[in-house]
Image (cartoon, rainbow, N blue to C red; front, side):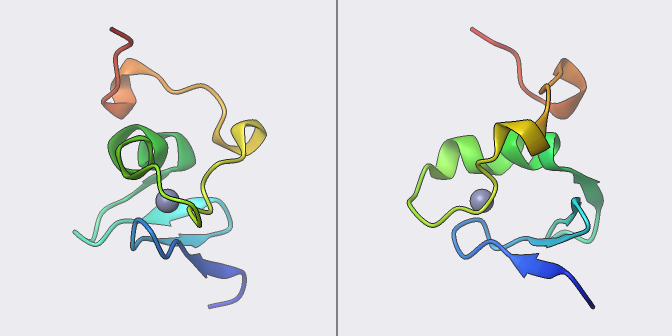
Length: 65
Ligand SMILES: [Zn+2]
């Protein structure tokens, strides 16, 4: 696939800003951030561009404490 990137930290593939989770489901960068990247917090995570991630909503599985 063209433009495919794989986050070495989270282990998910990102194609044209669409996230392919290892479970087989797809989602947005915001959802990836909410469910994986914010917990991983490792250097090398490619999903750290807030402009691309946009707003993370409750639907994405993340509620601010
Ligand atoms: Zn990541």
